[in-house]
Length: 391
Image (cartoon, rainbow, N blue to C red):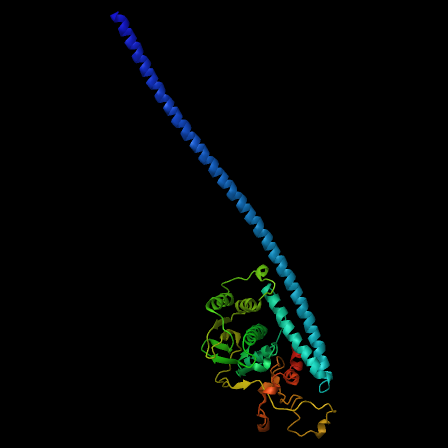
């Protein structure tokens, strides 16, 4: 009996040890299986994430290529269309210029002048689209004084009689003339558009060691802080303009100015409020864009020259008297009562009549002439020879 009990105890001990060993082994296998399952699940998740990222990268790449292609195609289409409009507008302007020379002094002169002024504004708008889409300004001019550049810009905006400007005959090199004309015209258009119709926009110059700053002051509604910061970023080239995001009423003025400034080496900045409570725009033109001065020759002092507003009677419908019957003091006066400018430069004479001194009898101003078409005709009359020379 004792032996049987001993054998039974030994068997029970062996079975217990075996059971413990198997239980431990099972737990180890269970733990390993759990670890492998978790590792597999982690691998599956990582694979799925990598697959999602790969698909996202592929989609982004395809989308970027499509958007880039669409942007390139859109830009090319806009540039091509804008260039065609500029070319066609220039042809129309040339035809009108020829007609103005043929009909100077007769009844159709005023109508032709209105057409020509509208054409100049259309060309400026079309040029903005060309520039924003990567094109170049389409017009070429010889080197010009800053005064003529400002005058050419004034001739491309509506309400040009509200612009008062200084004279500074620092001469700008040829390649920078049209970019500066377009830039100043765009800034003037913005200033005139957002200021009261009875107010003026002043253009002045500040000469410095490194160049000249063109200063444009208006008395209009100034931008708020957010708008001002956005405008500064656009003008500085810190915020790119996507041609697809311009919207149904695209604003291409500041983007075109920014593109020209970066390409030709001048800078544009806006600030406010100015002394009139409005906005000040500044165009810094470095010395590299000026024709070098001769040694020992100083530039002339600046002088305020408001757009002439002369008290003159409306044109008489009767035939004009023969030139030989006109007094000598009147022969250089246009139909609108403005003195014709004796041109010093062959181009950009939209400011033509503003730079010639007026006789004492003509210094009285009449605000009723501001909106008169014959003033526009007189303003334009000096520009034809310059336009012909530039073409």
